[in-house]
Length: 353
Ligand SMILES: NC(=O)c1ccc[n+]([C@@H]2O[C@H](COP(=O)([O-])OP(=O)(O)OC[C@H]3O[C@@H](n4cnc5c(N)ncnc54)[C@H](O)[C@@H]3O)[C@@H](O)[C@H]2O)c1
Image 1: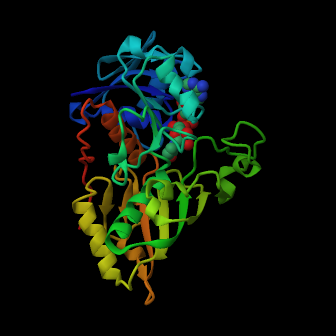
Image 2 (image 1 turned 90 degrees about the vertical axis):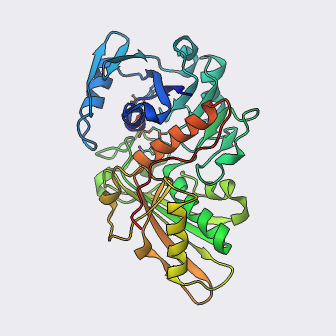
Image 3 (image 1 turned 90 degrees about the horizontal axis):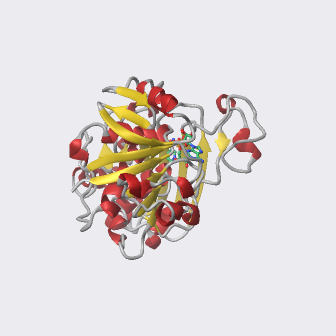
């Protein structure tokens, strides 16, 4: 079965979704329509020419009301709010809300109540969605009868959660503390700005290339919402000027003393088995740019593992904040769009074990 999606917001995430789905029919998805406040000519240009990902591997053109990708016309709306977008008229079943503007459950739900879509996946840590579903960790808790607006939380939370899941299941885990170093985001500014930033925090308007910017609004605590057995979590989140490629670190206390080898073996096994495609494993010495283009939620880095005699541990994983997260959004779109969700895990393996 193919799930028809609508993409609201054709920015970094929206265009990544288009690149992935445009790659071929094996994704089980098709893009029925897109919507953005920008005119379709600009959207076509932005898809064709991408400073970070390079040229689009295919053809892209614009014609009135349509984005034409690899010869296939895709309806392009030019609306500024979910109330106005007629998704059902073009057969879009699942809307991926990727503007960053309609993050609350109530606003995102308008794609259903007003646009006629069946389900919505919000591409951010939504406020009050019907469920937070992190693929590989708790996506099996999806309940089609109760969950219409779902959120995968954030890219950083996905990276942390899959590492936490392995540790929790294998060794028990408590006293968790997490840290995310996130590459620059589109809403950041080249120079200090006083308006138009992501949230009402003056630090988020500071010049991107000059500072490490604390971003305490991204709720690292959502790891606990997804994996309640973890208990309380301390967390920190920072934006840094690198253009792509981010870092997640997690420390905590296992039920018994562990060796570095035990921890790394558990991660390698999960990457090759239960979390195939969601967790990847690479022993090659890695820096952040190496994760660019990796579809996993987390590229586990065994060189970052530490273990202490009292059961303390620390682990490190990298993630492509756009590409990995976009794959998870599409995994969720397949899940909520399926009539009988079979919960297939992402198929893209990238492990070097
Ligand atoms: N880029 C990342 O690394 C990343 C990772 C995870 C989650 N996210 C989240 O995904 C969301 C989108 O991020 P992005 O990086 O793609 O942002 P972006 O700024 O690149 O794209 C946003 C797009 O939405 C469009 N838009 C803005 N207001 C609109 C409106 N009212 N109606 C229709 N379109 C509108 C803009 O024109 C733009 O094309 C944000 O909530 C962000 O926090 C981003």
